[in-house]
Image (cartoon, rainbow, N blue to C red):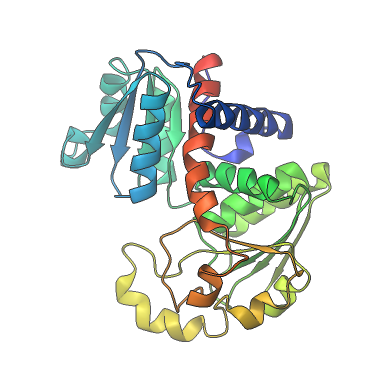
Length: 305
């Protein structure tokens, strides 16, 4: 049985296998030929952190696959009232066929998976957001960026860590630009650099966003005022001065470069309104691809039980 907790657990071949399945499932949906790959299966959806895209994409996705999604917030289950993770895992996973979890702790996610009887999907933790990166990969390929040069501008957070793993596994060039003091986790960056030795990926780190974006074919960022960090907003606005992806910064990228953002976006902070709504932005294709990529992940995991 396999879980989908971080891309570091997957080979390049497995990532591309899931991606090809996503393209197949998306084509079937668009042609009106939805296949019940997970007929009468139940997806338990545990949300300790709320999300628009994650809930809609997973709940719609399991329905389109012929199954049903069960939404469980921390107010709905005993996990939010102090029950040990291992007990919750052993109870819930005797009743459902798969679980997705969106929570604060990668450690708790991995503990849940270690006691689970069914596949577990990471729908976002403090360290990784792998389902988003599958959607991003799908979007890049759809827009002709099969061998991208990626510039990530912003906070060294879970999205940055996930970009590191994707690039290291697939052999892409990735340039990470963060302000001083907001660099990525050293343990995770070292793991990525080890994987990069095998794949041929070129990964560089800088505190200069212009250096990262120059001639890039994909420019991406993420909010640097995340849920639970609003009290740090004033300090972060000062610390991230010069890290907004605006038209001046995008002008340094390749002429046909695309812009990605996992959303939600703080317009005027990490990205300007002009870039977000501009012709290089493919953020809504990217958001839609969460649905298709996650359906493929669920089907693949179900087939590998």
